[in-house]
Length: 256
Image (tube, rainbow, N blue to C red; front, side, top):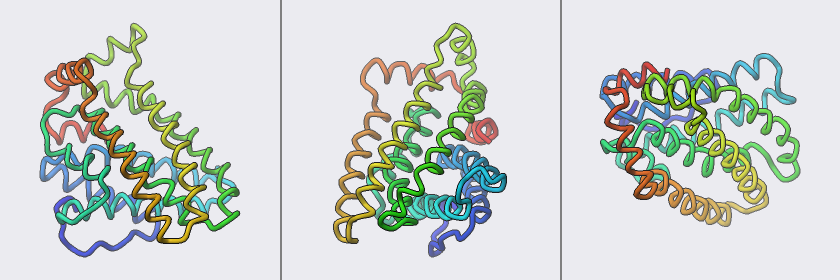
């Protein structure tokens, strides 16, 4: 999947999304590609979302399933375009392009994917499965996902600790930087995505494309800040990079 040049076919169900993500992760393992890092995180989130739908945690499980599929297809399409050397959104180009560089740490790869997928894709997907006043009815279920994501953060932190063992001692003395960064990034991005959705849902296709291009530019600026976080941030990232777990398959095992 990572290197596939076959025509892109959108997933139609949440189960099919999970199968596609499994294929991305398997291909990343074979090809030693860091493209699998965000896919592993996203696969875990999607599986938790599917469990919540099946438990009846949402007011409208069918609508949430449709949103999950539409949301995932934007990422899968962007990944396919990048793998086929076709144009895609600028913020995804930043995220995917970083996987070909040695320096970014695993947390940066995850944040780059979160940035592109939530800041750009989520608002577009939410608007796409709604129309006019129907979007307001999605808000409670949309916010319920925030609780699922927050509940996952301890698990994400544990997985990151396997990748960078020094994170454990830092966490024990109160320096929970990784969890705080992920928590803020995800919740802040989801709030921004809802604002994007409320704008897009009232626009015609031409103006919606212009708005998404504007959002893409903004998300690309954030991506560049994540990738090159200033002199002190870059020095800290370099220290982490030389001490974190080596080898893509081992990192994928920790994330998965």
